[in-house]
Image (cartoon, rainbow, N blue to C red; front, side, top):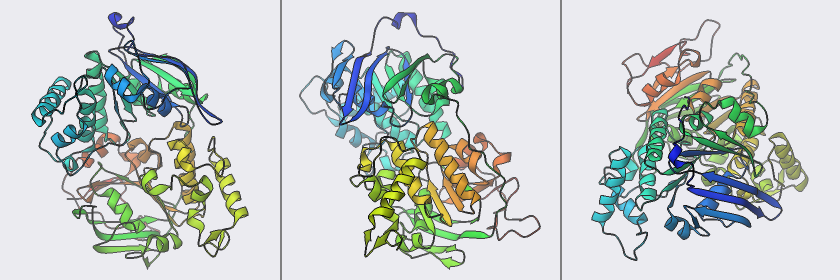
Amino acid sequence: MTNTRTRPETMRDTMAVELSGVTKRYGELTALDDVSLVVRPGTVHGLIGENGAGKSTLSKIMFGMVAPDRGSVRVLGTDTTSTSAARAAGVGMVHQHFAQAPSMSVLENLALAARASDERRILSLREVGRRAQDVAGRLGFDLDLRARVEKLSVGARQRIEIVKALQHGARVLLLDEPTAVLAPAEIAELVELMRGLAETGTAVVFVSHKLEEVRAACDEVTVLRRGRVAARLDGAGLSARALARAMTGDDPVRAPKAAVDPGPAALLVRELHARDDRGRPAVTGAGLSIHEGEIVGIAGIDGNGQEEFVEAIAGLRGVESGGIELHGTSLAGRKPREIRGLGVAHIASDRLETGVAPTLSIQDNVVAARYCDPEHARFGFTRPRPAREAVEQAIADYDIRGASPALPIGALSGGNMQKVVVARELANSPAVLLAAHPTRGVDLKAIERIHAAILGARARGCAIMLLSTELDELLALSDRIVVFSRGRIVAELDPAKTDPAEIGVYMTGATPTAVTPAIPPTPPAAPDAGHLTERTAVPS
């Protein structure tokens, strides 16, 4: 995707957002250092940078959630010092994690968020619905106000958040990592929506790590590096390499994927059935095997059972029927601690919810999996010296910036927090790694380190299940890719002979009828019929 747009001449002299000399410190940490930024009306302005570069802090300052220690913030000519002042001035924000009531309708969710920008009154449901439909109509998409939010795709739920932000006339829209959980088709729709907003005069600030999307959507790009502005770039004709160099100071390096001969089957899952959090069928007969030294990628649109599949294997979700075996030992019905003790590590999909304890120290989080290990703990208490050595090794190996062992892990940026999780899960050389979205919301350098760690585990014989919405990531790392749709595996693909477009078709459930692939046995000397050399579709 290449951006060839030119900025409208009529918009160059009017500023939607002006930040001048903004500095923000948290104790000894300087999150932002003398940052100045201009966002023009009618443009999409990219804000990129590595984890810990200051993007989130800057977004919060623009939205009035955080006050700068020094400097000024003006929105459409008005000084803003609080969220209410920013909203009144015309700023709306869509956060990465949606604030929604899934069991309620779209209209009810919009009503919960509704507030009159210049009137002290409660809006009626009819008025909320009218405003929402007006916004959706201007943006070119349909909005089913009666639909339950839990029934909607992630992309549709995100559009609800955009309508929330715009229904009271916001003219500056902040989007924080909006593509992190979207399927490829939904990402394309979002880019088109951002361009449509810009054409109506709205200023869009697009916070992202995904360089191709920044190139496709943005008129201008500001690059932050360690709290300072590293570059201001014109979006037209911008290359991903130039963006990466501006972010990191050097060219990106892809971890080499060495050829590995898979060993015997380590993990075997047969006809698994499991339910979601609301008791509805989520996994309906899915099965696969993963061999030692093999990475099996799992693709699928969010909500099609792949998350529940991983959680059931990890012992975090009950299994209704089916089998799960690790080197012939059944895992079904075992507690997560038992499964971990048998050699299964798990990088959880939601690091804040289940991956870390935010209020505890980095050290406590790193050694959390070792309380039953005699080398690191006695009588349920960690031994200080091994614990400190473990966390210092993790900080050094993964370049976890701004970290000290005693620092609460919740004080780290999302990417550095994720590096702690990966370091912890790979520290004991597990037999099986369940990696759910291991690079979600992290920057290029962190992605490089995490990819290298995963490939290193593969080289050591670890059997790896890689769940990701990043199709390029699956294609780069996986030895096989399976696609989930409606709780089942509907296709198994050879990464060397497929592409994102084909995977995307299977993700939508549009699969041709073919023969169901067998669960691969231990590979014999002859080619294994279970390991599909090209592709097979499975009827759903």
